[in-house]
Length: 165
Image (cartoon, rainbow, N blue to C red; front, side, top):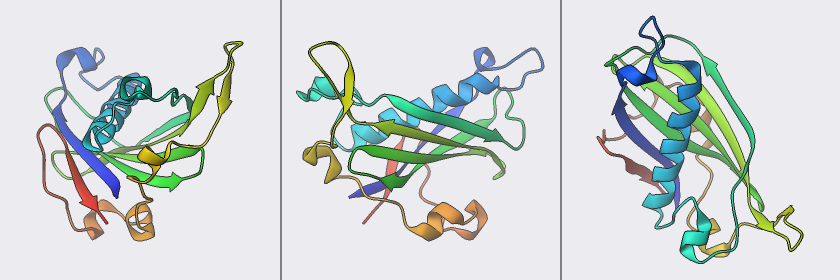
């Protein structure tokens, strides 16, 4: 069962503002990138209908706290940790670490599993067992500890599921 995934990418010029600093909105795109990679590492698409499931995963919360600038041509490790796995939702903690080892931002996404009703409305439902059985919560010490006190997982240029239990 997996609880962690990471991707490494280089900041493109189009990601930055006039000062060459990553525009805040791009951190949310980066969060989706690592989430989609996490799902692919489990053998799924984040678009569950592509896996024959009549469910979707709308966001109900997204936030990001910024600590230091990320600039054009910096490499950044984007690391997803499953903070909480509920019966109907997943909460991710997402950390952004610059190539010099400094954590520059930390985000959080909460997604719920929903099924479209006949009237078009979405209704929260339990996570499909095929997906739920592949995901677990990250250990508490990983979620609360700083990156410097942890064992660093192997680096990946395109992404890797770095820890499973």
